Length: 223
Image (cartoon, rainbow, N blue to C red; front, side, top):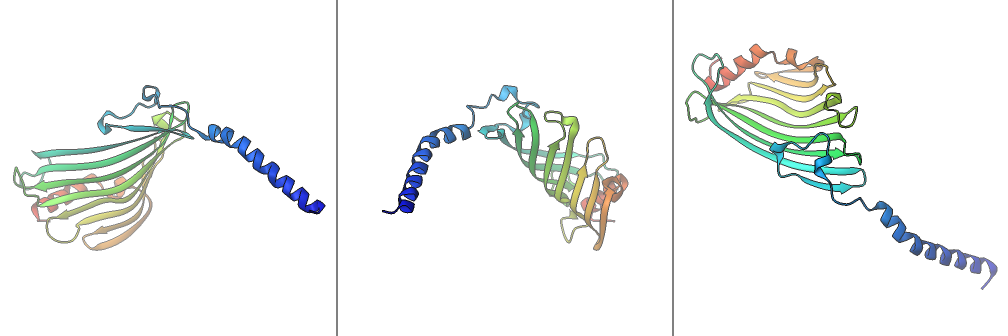
């Protein structure tokens, strides 16, 4: 064996030995700490998403929870031409990311909610509002809810009667910085007419009186 081959063999052997020596140390350094102490989490976990599952990851505890709520028919206070009743189905999944100081620094949600409306006390539904969104809550200061920026993406509202196309539908993104009115960028289809908005307060996109009128129209099938 020449000198070059001997040196190469020695280097390979040395690297292999070092790898074997270093492997346990590296694995140990990458192993996350022990079980998550949920009592230390700030903010605390929402009791409506129980049961929560928390795991220790490299960046800190990661907790996931789901919620499925249903609300039976009840009379609303919408000022429609006839009494309107509402029932609701809410399905949400949430993931919270904490650092190893147990401070929440990010959250992600998936939400699928449906409100049904009817002119009869027990249905059937004659109109509906559905929402299918993902939203992210990023903390400016970990653990401080007042510093969250909330970004919502998806179908924000789909308002329709039981028959036919949507009366009003908004698809896009709402960004809500801390203490600031959220702005909407996306498309709205209003009775078949599409419009695009860029950084417009959502309260201007769908004012309260317009929302009430749409609910009444969807529930009663009359404009």
